[in-house]
Length: 134
Image (cartoon, rainbow, N blue to C red; front, side, top):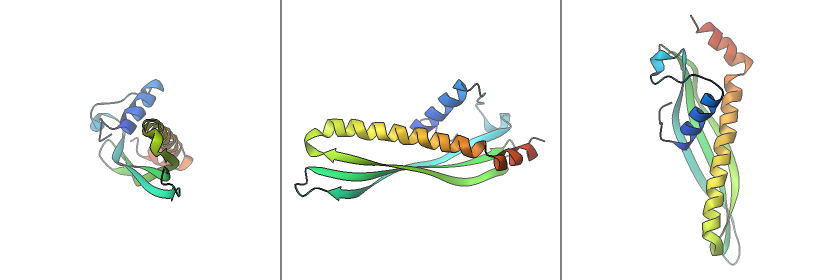
């Protein structure tokens, strides 16, 4: 992974370790490498109440990744995985709204991680990996 400080990368590494997957410090040491190229969290206004005390936003979390073999040959080219949630902000309860936003971001990261695992364990990907083990 490229950005060891990102929340998604930390979550991914912790989950892989919990699954007894060995993580190498350098990608050349591993048969395959998952490169987290970029993470984005965007928000767009969905609705605003007449009193402007409550607003709704759509949060969109996107992770771009690619999978390479130990020589750097691309197995899965840059791919975007996206998840979204609706956040309702109440101006009278900003602290709880901020906590909800963080909770939604963590939930989106977990959902994207599952999408990544599904992509990595798909039959097509397993065939590609089998062809690169040499």
